[in-house]
Length: 230
Image (cartoon, rainbow, N blue to C red):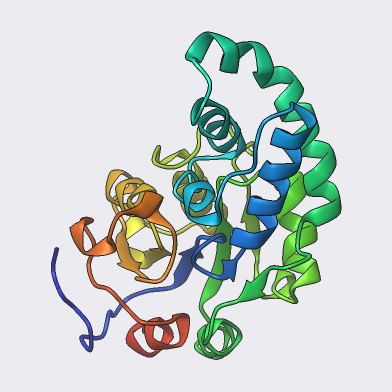
């Protein structure tokens, strides 16, 4: 890891920003939904820290891990299709009910816009959940592009979503910086060839971001905006 806190990044024309754990604290929405799913299956509830440790690799991963906490793989596999249907139904009701922007998110996005930076939201959350959540929390209109985990054939840590952003903006990788809270974000950025900044307050599967390969750890999106320059 290179510590670039306080060192400006120049030549940047666009910013790709993750959603859960980076812009929004969605832990309570996801925790409530997973426990509704487990209740439907006759399983006991999980604590919030356990659920949060599964966040970041998409809904299928989240649901699968939540089943395997106390079920053998064979049983979890039998439950999986039903659990996914249950998750879809419950999350449509709970999505955004408890979610809150982290400190500095709106301020950071406004500051990036003031610098004429183009913005893309790239998340592993399905697009059908992503767009309503962004609208409910007042974040939607900051973004020129919004890609979910089901927008393309692959999702983070694969670079496909980021490569599509580069193409959509007609920019080279070195003109883009990604911001995220997990190793998935840093791996995707590295594979796509762009720079990456990390926030330390998100989920990252229960692991500290200090262990990730990143160009710097910033305390907020506002701090990131202050470092990023065209």
